[in-house]
Length: 315
Image (cartoon, rainbow, N blue to C red):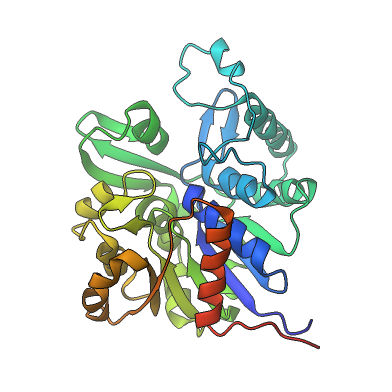
């Protein structure tokens, strides 16, 4: 095959991992660059864990525990028993995975270099996975209980504190990973995965030059809703949309991406929202987006590429 079309995706976490596993499986003729949020990374148990990146790697490689949607299947949780504070559920295999990453980082390799090594070891090919930056950025929630790391908010406090502010610490001093802006400008298709837009995508968009490059890119741009009706697949999406003054529904996802997408994918059950999406000057695609099986993830990828006219190119 020749003239591989260039697909660029943003996101991370469970929703991003599920979709990307389907895209990866369905089309091996595409040039796919995946840029993943790293602002939810956390130093814990002596290692630096990258939950969004790890989820993407585990889903694409088939290592993921499908019952939880995160972590490694058939993992055990003995290591964390050695720590007084064990609120962050890091499995033993998961810990070993991150311990190996720590060794690379301690030997002065950068995060993107360690991910490249990991993708090779996991036999992941025809897709390139990058962190949004090699610099340390962390999301903090300002709440009625004080400032807390996003992982503490999500896991330790189970998303119960009242949100008063969101801060991406060190984001203004961080540099987008090398090649990101050029790849945005040269992409044929940009996909915003069904990830939480505020904590998994906004950190990427906040970095210098990213939003402007997306607006300038001639690529077709599409977002996949992480919400069906009044149900969010994962995490505090509804609370965060309300905090941002947006509608807590798939329409709120359209409102969030309004100026940087041409299309949005909603679930077939949300066809009643068509007029509201049209009012945002966004074209709507309806498909089954509840990716509870690999075949659904593949079908979603197939539908998007079909609508975007990404057909196989033969020599």
